Image (cartoon, rainbow, N blue to C red; front, side, top):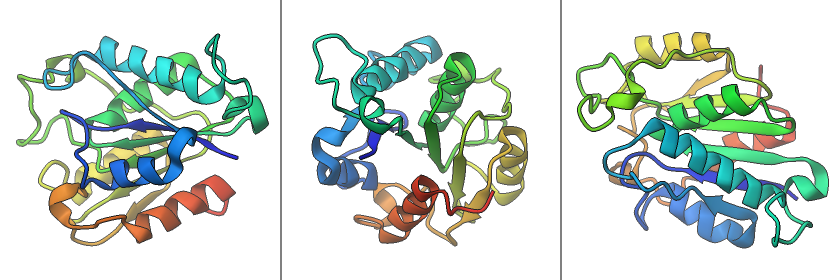
Length: 197
């Protein structure tokens, strides 16, 4: 079995968002981060929240069932969207965990005109450094927060395979993707190790 850490963007993901629908599907195999700064993101708070969720998902938190996530077979997958991709990348760089894969969807360009500079000021100085372990970045050609050129730069910095899914905006609730079957297939390829590297 695989354990999943859900890392939404600013404000969290609403009930129509594919992350929320996947979380419902996965049940107790998924843990969502719970930072105290959802709407005015603080980088340290978000990265600490990823650590806490990882401990819960992997069965490393005392008082939790040791038969979950990494406690079973060493497989935990971070499922991040938007600003959550940056929190995931920072946590991976800091924690350097073993057996953790990252599925990064629609990361925003920190230098782009739509980036929420005032609300997410603690994210502005981040640098995309090579990610440890398997990863896959998924983007949209018409994302207002990150154009294809910026996506290519991010993928190169993180040294991750990169897939465009066409024109689906910010790949969020407004994109009308529902359970996003195509995304689940990309995630499955990452988990199975069949996503191209």
